[in-house]
Amino acid sequence: QVQLVESGGGLVQAGGSLRLSCAASVSIFSINVMGWYRQAPGKQRELVAAISGGGSTNYADSVKGRFTISRDNAKNTLYLQMNSLKPEDTAVYYCNARGLYSNLSPYDYWGQGTQVTVSS
Image (cartoon, rainbow, N blue to C red):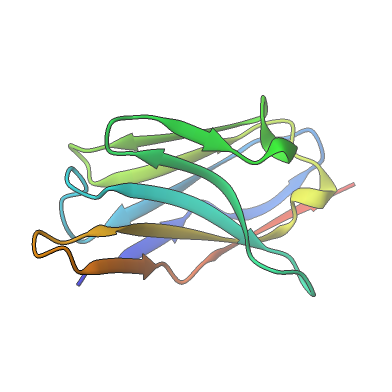
């Protein structure tokens, strides 16, 4: 079992910045992929950014150049630095960890979410 706890959400004006953190209850060194997703009211959950164990990253087109995902294996923490925030970034942001156990069974864990609200 992996517990993920997000923090760092809040209310910010358009153009501002926030940094989200996701603390894991286990070492994240061996987690295959960690990512941030978001869900706005009335919309489906969508991928914002993901990072592999090797450090490869991918981003939604809507956040490229503004958001940066990173992981600190020593602190078992995933981050999302969000700059130049826009009202359309308003959503609940979720941390995700997925991959395969050594016995090849899959795992897929989610945090409880943290609210990000960007005012215009």
